[in-house]
Length: 468
Image (cartoon, rainbow, N blue to C red; front, side, top):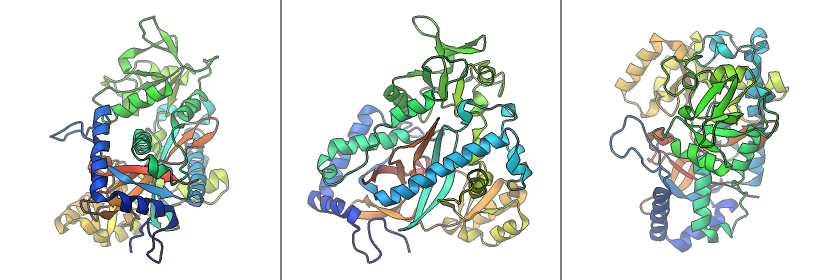
């Protein structure tokens, strides 16, 4: 039975949602729809759009926004926060280890082949330790709820997790449009995320920097699907948004072209994939790279956030071992558990998956954004058979998980409130300290019965409240 986050076990409205229910009753469904139209007009006016590559129609579309907040109590957040911080620390310890001594592999805990033969592993990073021993500076951890007291980690995002702009803009819209609703709650603020991000980035300045590090946000350009977020974060941090053509490397240092001449750059918050950041080190055909950037990084002239090769820590084959990482590096038990996962590379797991495909969710090990998945209970027999052929051809490229009964949050429907499945992505910042604002991005599957919340697959977003 699906867990409703608004209702208790007896079917009554939980205390944390009581004021929201009262507000809905007072405003009425028609009134809520009018306010939703106003909110969408604001989003469109200020340019909060999301491009999806390869689609026709509107290339700059709005992510659907839901007015009803998703609420965590203070006690729920305390547990989530502890688990998120723990996981971010362990993932960074794992990256430090596998690019240096590889002790977790020598101990036989993590198989070496899923690390060193993985395309996300960058051998160019071997033997190099970034400033502060931080590889993944922004860790986005996707969490699902399967019961009132049950939270599980669905996957980790250690490269460039997106969506934080929606967390901030959702809150801005809600506080602007519904001050009366906020007056009934004590909601923890999230608006200091940009200052915390800047502080975390400045804490990992390179050895060559002897002053306050100059930070820039590196974007591939305005055609990128997350360009709005790149420019938005740069603006809120008060730093320059640059494209690759704005940067050059000289004498092991990185400079930004300005109307007043070159200016040193110390820390680059990059939103460009590993393979494209430097044509001299990675893909020679990259038009987005800055020649010599990687050598400047390894030489201590600049810091790249996040580090090239950090993606090995969020690979779905590696995900299985995160609870073991927590025990190995931190000497602790995992506060937030993984979803049970079968690795098709293992013969017994492979046999189980092939025998139960109609019941399982199967994912590509290197996949992201909800693409390349099989959701067994929603698939046709022909789709299942075609996917089975793909698994047989290359078992190591797939993992499988049970079809979770994700919790559902109240969502505005055409004629009333409906229950829709949700997940949650907090954004954990890692510098000299680990920082976490009380909130994150709640994504909602807007189609009835759907479990796919990804923006690229038609999912929506809603504000996330942590009550003080």
